[in-house]
Image: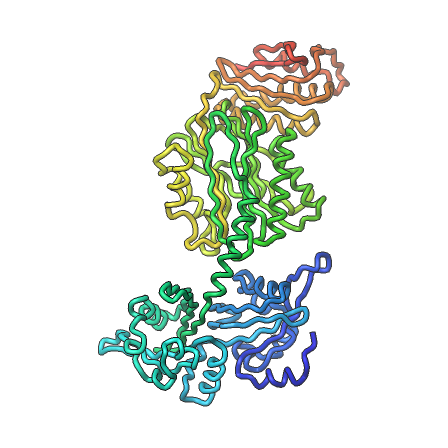
Length: 614
């Protein structure tokens, strides 16, 4: 990315900071992963606080690691990829860099050119030659610029500001000349600053040093202005302002298009399931044409079974939106094919690698059986759902797996839990509970308290209550999807639960986990070891000797009844097992440990083998 020598000579003499950076791309995908500083003038090095030799030839992530996630690096990448210039004002108080920087970034070759100034250095004011040079730069750099000096009363309280410097563009906004404004108090030249709160902002920035930026609308003249205020040393504030009416209108139009696209990617309507009520909210945080990767879905699997999904694809761009749509459709397809929850996420993870989708997605998928009052859930790097049962509310303890797209060899295991009649289930994305300065544990505790305090059983009103409560970071820094379900179904008496498993070897361990979870929920742990042993014998026999799905049913009455159904009508028969035999003892073990067992032929074909434990 060479630059003409005369070009660089001009930049060397400029009092503003100038730098050239070249993109570093991933060899496999050509995606920009970093930038290398190829040039920086002396003024820029002074502003950055390091010698030029320490900056040139180094990578952005190595030079300023504390700023990688603040939005500046993605902005540089966007300038290179879209070939559109951009501006940014940012304040840093970091070990690697400190200052209040106003930047202009433009594309240059396979990289960018950036012009920057530290607004704190405007303290030089017009009395020194260095200050005069810098103010000349600022005259040309902003649409409007003024330097204000605080006026204090006898008690040291700021009561006004005096205009120490203003450029021609800034003076034109007020309808005065530069000469009319310099040296005059703000209360005289711009009394509206008290009415619109700007005076208080100037005072706060002067006293705290914390910069402030905002967009102010003036409906009477149909304009919107961007105003940036930074402390410029003791008793000075630098104020820059520009008319952004046209940009705001463009943003509004672009946001409207993005919102329409986002709505198209989310379900327009959720299916009706008997005994189940649900409500959902989507709170976008993205800007412009960015589209969030958060999504939710409810999938009707059978008349009395529903799949529930919430997830978050990394990124806020068209690629993330496309990946989100593909993952969402894949989950729907695998759920409709009859895969158990762990199988649904396993196949979705494989799809990401098969389609070479270089993205990550967190997800919670659960299969809900309202009439049974149970659900089986799987986590892929996602925060767990909240469950409210009567006076008890908390995050559900689920077996965890990695996000989708991390490794092809990822394994996922389901956890089955009770969702009795009258309970409420809340699924959400991490933007609701987590931020850069808001730990997720704190956010989840706030969410738990909000769900517990919700005075309603209606999911719409529960969501209204949760979103009105102070849950999670303020302001938010990510999109939020949230889904609430309440179970109003009348559950079976005696309690009975069943699950269908595919006729494959892995189903035996999945069925044992399901049974273990239910017996623990039913507080039947004394029966757990015997029940798992006998179930293992029956389901292994069914998988080995039949073709098709296997159904496991658990019923809690005066005794525990465990039944395994398969498509074969051939009844099991005890076989003699010699001392050297490796199998053939299954039914002998059942006879020895169970208080009763038997076999039944099903009217629809197939058989059921059952046992009871008391």
